[in-house]
Length: 251
Image (cartoon, rainbow, N blue to C red):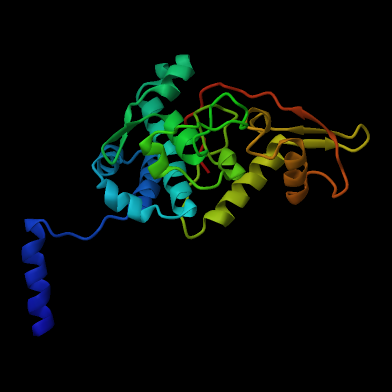
C-alpha cells in the first residue's frame, strides 16, 4: 500500500514540474529513425533538442563517444529533414552548410558548426585538417570532442549521392558501428591495383587528409580494413565525388 501511495503522489507532482530526465542521445537516434520513416514526429523531436536544458545536455555528453553519437545523428537528421522540406537549398551548398537554421539547447547552429567545430574539434574547414582555430568560441569549447576520430567522415551524410549512408548511432555500440560504416564505405569506394601499385580512395580522404593522418595514415587505415596488403605503400589517387542530391540514402 505504501508503494502504491508513493506512485500516486509521484504522478500528482509531475505536472507541477517534476519529470524524468530526457535521454538526448536517445532522442537523436529517434530523430534519425523518424527522418528515415517520415512518420511525422520530426518536428516534435527537433523541438525537444532545441529546448533541451544545456546543463543537462552537457552532463549527458561527457565523453567523446556520447558527443559523436549525438552530433552524428543530429547532423544527418537535420540535413535530411531540411533538404526534404526544401531541396532547392542544395543549389547553394556552401550557404546551406553555413546557415544557422538549427537549434540545440537554445543555441543556433549550422551544419558546419556541428561537423567542423564540434566533431572535428574547431577545425578550419578548408585547411585539409591541418589547422584548428586558435580562439574557438565558448560554444565550441563546451560541445567539441577532445580527439578527432577519422571514422566520422564515413558516417556523416551531407545529402550528396557519394555520401556515406545514414545510420542510427548509439553510444553503447558506437565503436562497432563506426568501424562497420568505415569498412563498408571504404570497400565500396576504394580499389587497389597491385600491378601498378596504385590505390584509389574516397575523395573525403583528400579533403580531410589531416584527420586521416595524411598519406601514412591513409595507408594504415587501408591496411586495417584489408584494402591493401600489409607491406604496400601505393601511390594515392582519389575517387570522383558525385554531388547529386540523394535524400533517401539510409542503411
